[in-house]
Figure 1: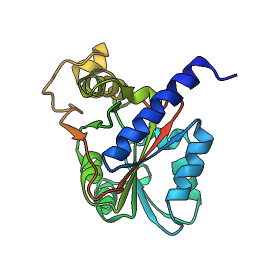
Figure 2: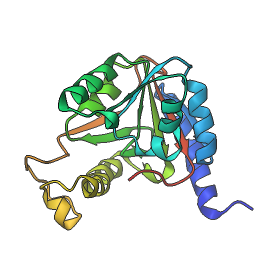
Figure 3: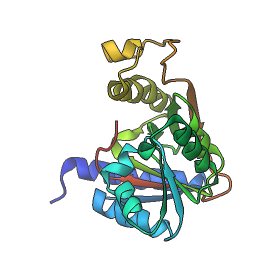
Figure 4: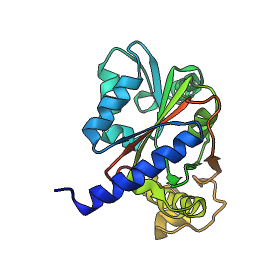
Length: 212
């Protein structure tokens, strides 16, 4: 018997897939992590160069591990051992075959919201990599664009700052302080409302809670 939350995610997922396709994204709904991993690997040809930044959801479904172990060129910033190497790898993202990312929030009508500190992740979503694959748990889906922006700023960003523990009000309080601190990670807020060229950005929606 289907559990209530599974049914809830699946029904909203079907609506969102259609709305994303109407905006010229590719979109797929997978009921669990295992099927999401299978779908992602179908979309990434062997031999491809693959980069990712802050892709917790891709990690949680096992995708980044599969890329590192498989026949791919992994552009993994977490393996960098110096600032110079980190700069080189993040710039290489812009010429890679496939860039993996999560979403801070998605509106049910098919618009994605991401918030960034440095901006390299949102920049790669907007331009550069041949393809972008977004792995997103259905917990990221909000009823409206306004709600999605609110989630990105008041849930995703303060929660992520608990990982980084930098000098910002939300590190201390867990709540957005609309700060202008040097360590602020809310420096770019990008709404991706349409895909051009069509199909460049691909969504894999997962019927589980993933990421922050």
